[in-house]
Length: 226
Image 1 (cartoon, one colour):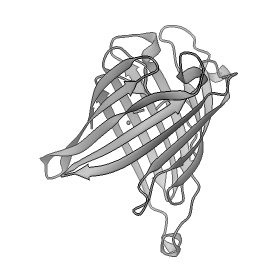
Image 2: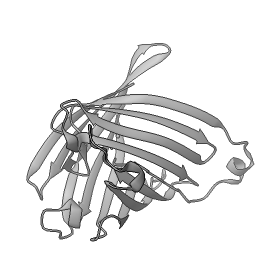
Image 3: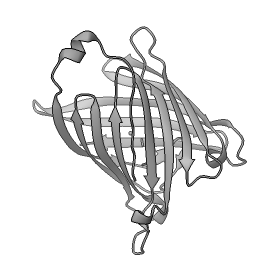
């Protein structure tokens, strides 16, 4: 889950493939879905003060992924509107990419094709491996942010019974903190599991306890995924 921020989200992933995977024919699939979030909180920052609907569509072919993600606050707050597009190419657990975030304004011209209300971010991430499950994310804003804000995050996934959990801690500067200094601005614990409804359908649910020591805020976000 954004939970991200994205209007042209271009994500390119680079890593290593095994010889067996290299010999496999690319498999193509298309997926659509929607999340219903009690609150939209991203990297420790609150982007809605009411529930949000977050649809997505994603095409995957081999290691290449192209998709769209959006978030719309049900309370009608302008700050809660977002639309992201993204693409990725991944080998193994290492990803290198680019994200363009845009924030449409309902009822007015938001200059979408003039690249107004957009922020571009280059990203580098490591998804962890069996012997070293720690995850890492580095994000660096490259346009429409004069401060070139940086965000980093470490995560540790683990499992308790049928529930997937992840502890995380993130730090950023400039746009991510109240005084612009690089500091911890996001930490907490997330939990997710699938609830079987029928043999062919399961409902995804997750909850995240999120704390931001910089803004002195705390959130408990619940998400239902279809």
